[in-house]
Image (cartoon, rainbow, N blue to C red; front, side, top):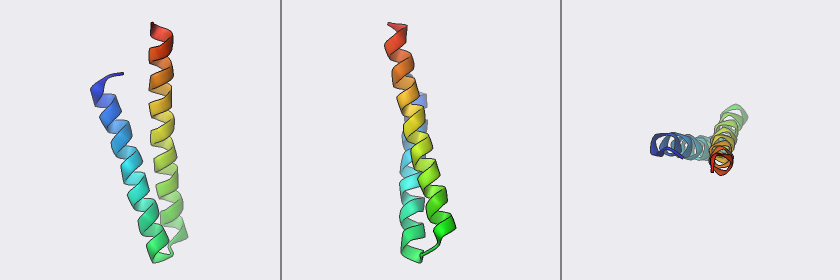
Amino acid sequence: MSVGRTVKNRSQEIKGRITEALGRATRNGKLERRGKVERISGNLRQAGEKARQAFKR
């Protein structure tokens, strides 16, 4: 897995966690959902990269 992609996916996940927590703290459901989507998207991309690397070998 390339380092650039790993950092990008991980930063998206962290950004999602922060946005989700901010939405929860302000009781803003839309912001919380957006954060959850970002977090899950980062996780899925990271899992896809790991699977791609597993089949490359």
